Image 1: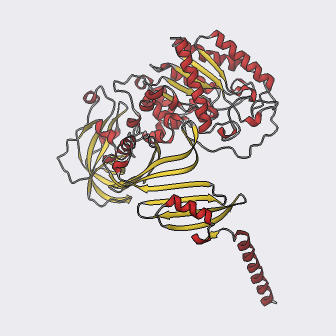
Image 2: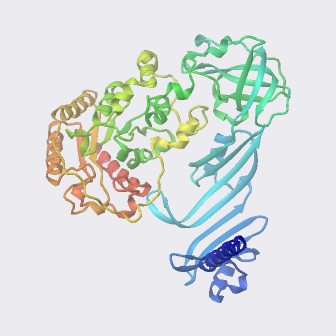
Image 3: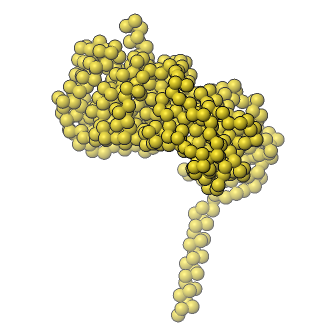
Length: 573
């Protein structure tokens, strides 16, 4: 009986295997000779003399597709071709010399890796639909650069115009060390009018905790003064033990322009590092200092660096965070020296925006415009969100309030460039994640569907007064506000509500009417309605979901906002 049961189990297993093979048997490795002749001709035309290394046949969405890879020592070509000869994708990766990189790309490499050894340089060309700039593009080129030295590896992905698209860096080297010598500690008077200074210490290695390091001693650049504040590291005593998180000093070109105290004896054989794990700002880490209890934490480290040069700040909730590409304002000036920045955060209610305007924006010396993406719910009586209360209780806000006098002193340093920002430890990672405060998202909402939304609308008098107070406060400082209503996916056309918050068509018309009245009342207030009750010209492929634009939609929206800004300036010289 037991033997019979085992035979049954074996039989069931075999049947299951046969079923799976039959279901997926079409997808397999094949020889090039098994590819239809018409497809072979296309492949040979595209790859030239590069030898074929792999051929796969698959079925996608009911259509036969052939994946072919050809490569040699200098090039790798991947093709995806449908049975009718249509190109799905073509990816070409070529090994090239550093000198073949466009000059803007070379500049970005130097900014990111300094004088580290460059091991590999590749040019990648992709044929396939992608969002580039303001349009859908079918041919995209970018460059991959790998650098390695002193136990650290860095991989860069860079656009032809020098924009850093992605950076992947190995974890810092972690060592337990003993301090054996110190340089003279600089004072605020020594470095005036600058706000930062480095100091070199020398250490002996007690233990390697993580990463590659084989030497017995090293020299490390620490912050002696950061953001005009002398650091606790300056009080470290010779003989004391420390755990350091290190990247090669040669990696950071920007550090070489800072005031640096190095009074140690000359020693060209001892490697130089920078301590990226140093506690700074009242003995807090950067993460603790800039903890605003929201995505604001990811944006404020850059804001404090460039606040004196900013001419435009974008506010709003998640629709504004995804929809405004601040890099597109002010033309070429903003590309090299950021003068526009997106401070919008997910869920940010009107109360949050009021705090930001009152405690930050009205103190900025060169601010000209505030672009405010306002969702109808911001002035809705029934809307509840706690972002404003969380901000007021956060450590970052408490720090800003305590040190307001020092933080808002205008710096005598020159304007911060993109190149400079991306080379500053503790700061560059924030910029790389969200340049100009905006994060690239190219996905398109597939198979959009609507649901029944609750219809609820009533303007809160208290919130409306907050809005008018913000406009008035900015008007006193000759700062213009460009307020806009963001579009929603075209699937909302013809719905009884205009958004997923239940704003009725009647309520929407009431809101638009009152905003137009404000525009007539305040000379610094400009209103633009992109929502249009659902009847706008933003295409479905411009949305990543119901109420958020993707990169293509954000490009269209920001272009329109910049045209409004320029038109206003020409009419009000």
